[in-house]
Length: 221
Image (tube, rainbow, N blue to C red; front, side):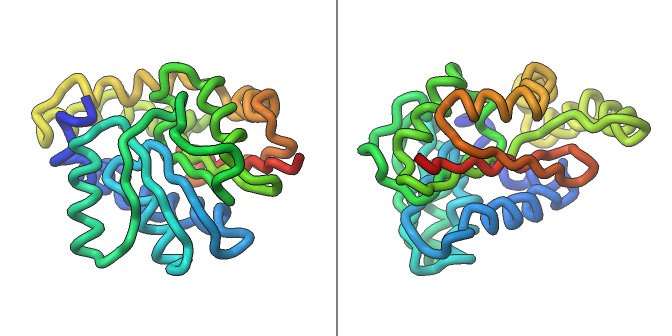
C-alpha cells in the first residue's frame, strides 16, 4: 500500500494536516536530540522527513532510515541527493531490526507504530538497539475529545479519505488511515506498553489539541 502511494505521500501529508505534520516532526526531533549529536535510527522512515530533520537539527549526527517499502525509500534517497544530506536508507522491519544491541543513542518512529504487525515485538526491538540512557521518540495520531474531537472526527473519517482518494487515486490507503488510528490504544495504555517493553520512564505530550501525541521513552538500565 505504501509503495502505491509513494509518489503522493509527501504532498498529502502536508495537505491533509495543513502543514502541522512538519511542526510535529520538528518538535519530536528536538525531544530526540536532548543529548546532542549521536547515532540515530528513524524507523518507518517513509520518504525520510524525520531522518532529514535530525540531520538539519544535528548535522554531525549519523542517521539511518529504515522502512519496508522500497518505493518509499527510492523517494527518500532522491530527496537526500537534492538536499545534500547524508542519510543511510535501508530496507527492513521494526519487528526484526538488522542492528546490534545498543547501536543507537536514539530511535524515532513517526506515524508508523500503528502499522507494524507485532507492536510489542517492535517496542522490544527499539529497547534492544538503544544504548543505556538512550531515548525513543514516537509520534502518533490520537483521538481528541470534546467539540474539537467531533469536528476532527468529521474531517478525519469523511473529508480526509475523500481528498486522499481524489489526489492519489488510492481509496484503500486513505480509508485505512482513520481505521488504524481508531484501533490504536489510548495514550495511557500505549505508555504502559512502552514500560512493559523495557523503558524506565515515558513522557506524553499532546500536540494540536491531542490530534497527535509525542511519546518520549527513556532506557535508563
